[in-house]
Length: 166
Image 1 (cartoon, helix red, strand yellow):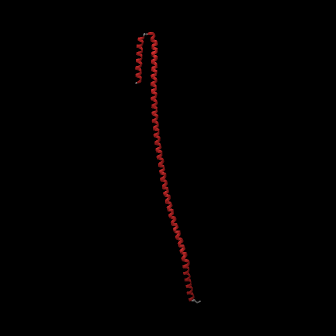
Image 2 (image 1 turned 120 degrees about the vertical axis):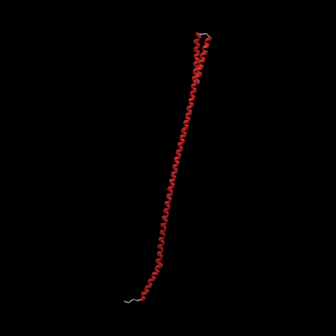
């Protein structure tokens, strides 16, 4: 078996041309396609990671804002309760003052009515004493003695009246 060198060199050249053609038209475009795909996948993963980080930050901000809003709402509720309690105390205090004033007013009115009734009773008693005394004394004493006794009784009643008013 003899080697045909020309044929061998021809086949080597054919294989090299085939490798060059395959490399130029098949391997390089295929490798470029694979590299582009890998690059897009890598960019997509980086973008997804960035989106996830942004989502986490947004979620954290939302939680912080929600916590701040809840805190503010609680403070407002507490403030409203304090104000309501203060207002209720003030209303109760005003009602107590008004009730005391009304009780004092009614007491004064009752005292005035009591004084008026006492005065009426004394007047009626003095009139009755005078009438009874006149009746009793008219039978027993003369007119001048009766007048002196009546005047004496009336002056005593007047003194009693001034003593009770003080």
